[in-house]
Length: 497
Image 1 (cartoon, rainbow, N blue to C red):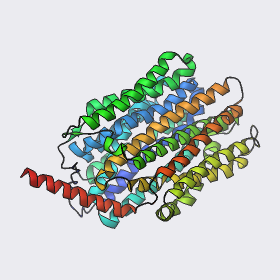
Image 2 (image 1 turned 120 degrees about the vertical axis):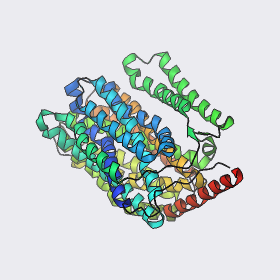
Image 3 (image 1 turned 90 degrees about the horizontal axis):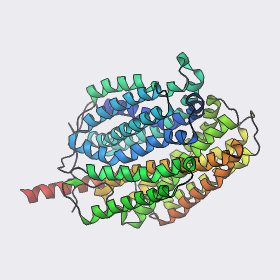
């Protein structure tokens, strides 16, 4: 049996738990906003730093690659060394990296800062929900997770608007740099507050992180994404495709090694026992496909409407709010619908994202340089509704296919899959976009990408058929997981005694 020892909370009824949760959510919001705020600023960054198309893709994907590579290891380190400690370290490094990004003088310096930002964000992220699980129980835990989940959507919408506002306001003549520098005072305040009110928690586990596996995972991800990002500029050399193949082989090899050579005292990265479950693997691929389409769309849409249509950063951000409005409309009903209809709701969400993306392309034919964005709004709204129906219940539906004690590991793999998919999406869709731009207009380049985006969402819809037919209630699943991990820990302790 794989034990997943219970958490060690400071007190089952820690009196300042809601204040601690608020502090961690505020700090995490900075990371969440950074996922969208930079997209609106990309055209301005391109002009100011003279960034190439590949460098713009790296500015986005470097963050995601670093996040994906560090996420699972950071979660294990938090369990071992203390989640508050890792949260404070990650927050401090995130603030320093934000300062570095804000003062970057070249595109390469900005890319380097984004790598550090992504790794720091991955250090912060798993500590938040793990600390919530230690501080809260029962309905309070569900409420805390609900607030955090709502913050995800709120932060994404705010990031789009804030990126436009800050870039266009040009405070102190800083322009796009403000989207990074605004993080610094928030991080400083969060560090002070978290040091005071957030309790230290850790898991009673003797398993250490797999640092060698983490290095292999990082190298494999870079080997896969680097040739795609740089291939067009380098003329698609044969060694690039060899790198991609080597990266895939390294990932498969890591999974096989973890399955055949388990190390009881080392926390696995890829959890091959979960990957052998068809429903779980299908869920990962759905998440991967969604992220490829979503991040690829966010990149090319921002470049088209600003550079091609002449929209200001603020106007571009406000246009994308239509997408967030669609998500907010569907968010309250996504879980109840999935609990009743299961995977059919997720399939409908993926199909709506495909239809909305096609609708945006139809609207693109009706807008010209400098004209209003209204023909784009219906497609954005439909795609936003689809996003909520697909993404919000996805983890709960897939949770029905994994053992309760493995839910934490499953969640880590989902987060990693999301970031890997995003990086691949930026690389692939960005390559198609800039390739088409060499011989045509921004609108032509955007329209050339659209069929690929639609195809990715249709693949996600088809894969939903392999998901479990029904969803599970999140609170029930979490309570069942607590019962099972506690029983596993007590059994191990009893045997050891």
